[in-house]
Image 1 (tube, one colour):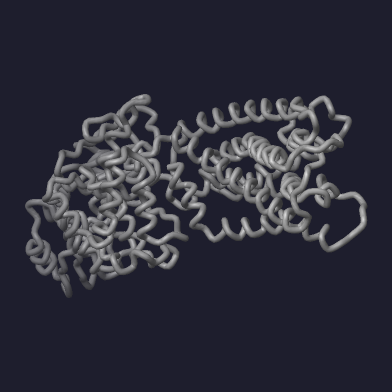
Image 2 (cartoon, each protein chain N blue to C red):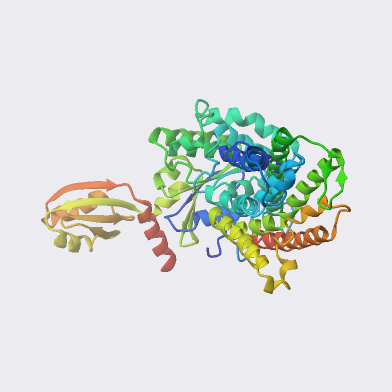
Length: 264
Length: 294
């Protein structure tokens, strides 16, 4: 099931359109900075990109996290089960037979895999574009000292892993929604909406008491990987929170789906 | 569904008849573990389908099914759809065996030419064929097909009927639902009739006819004809139009007796046509029999 799911995604033209789009976003910072001069603020890691091309990957990730990432997560996870229901393939998978628990878990695993691949792709495209534009030298950390390019690349990979872990919670919620309905689009929109609400609440400082529990609160904490020494606290918090969300919503999805009458 | 008790013997081609909404699809979905019955049990190949968490897989792996419409990933070709279904679950040898059969089953349903076209571009009949191919992929011991001839042209229907007959003769248990009496009559060994969630009749196809033959009689004076016929034993008038009657014949009534009675009563009979009984008629007869047991 899992392998077939991932393989099937690579048979869809949609996957390549989205890949091209994300690649475009990833190389955007390098193009903008290479064709303009002068300082001024920008999104995270924009300024640093002039010093080292590796920042291109981070700038790319920073650009997709607020919008494209929840969108992609919502789309993939929301469609996971519901789109099979509306296509009429769900009943045939179940009588194949694919066990219901297995179906939900492997769908989820496939969604997370595809999201991780997308994030890796963005980082890769950003790093390559940044390298072409600005080269890779010694890497200035956010704390002011320098680390080797090799060590910095390792941390970029770490950032990819962290961001991928960061969406596991939202993906679990999406899969849960997807077991509730036969409308993949509906589940996707619900999931994306939830991420948007979380980001809005995260922006209201009066609500700082609930911020640590918001799904999206620590999404940008991967920046801490580029301090010296690395500040782990926010990331640890973020990972723990995602584990809790994954646990709760996957259980909920299983509880719903293993009892559901499949009439689609 | 209401306390349905149904047993299908191995190797039998079983026709499951019922009008739309009788519960045929619901029964099939329950048999395949898609819908949970509120009470009762389902066994497939002597394995329970709702065993708690037990060996449901073992039973279903030997079942091929077409449930209402076929369902496919329409952006993929027919062949690739079958390959994905083959690969998607089960032990390695089962997956390999199914993969190896993809070309075979495509040929069986006459889609070997169209196998590489996207399902999106298939006609309804082609999708139906692909659905049957998918059901056959695992060399099933039990084949459950919900209205398998839906959307097929007469030639296609005949091919499917012959295919099912051949499979049953080879020892596959075939369970076919249909709302077409003639279709089921033409090929099945045994027939069950479902109405309003209940099994109202079961037996060999000929048994369904016990409700009597139908006759369409065209006359010049319907009202008088009706009153004459009401005194002929075994004859019941069952609807009709301004100048025609539908008459149900039970032993000892015959078409000749009806004709003689009408002509003897001075009625001009312009036509006397034996009618193929519609499934609706069979149901009406069966359901009435069920509800007024005398």
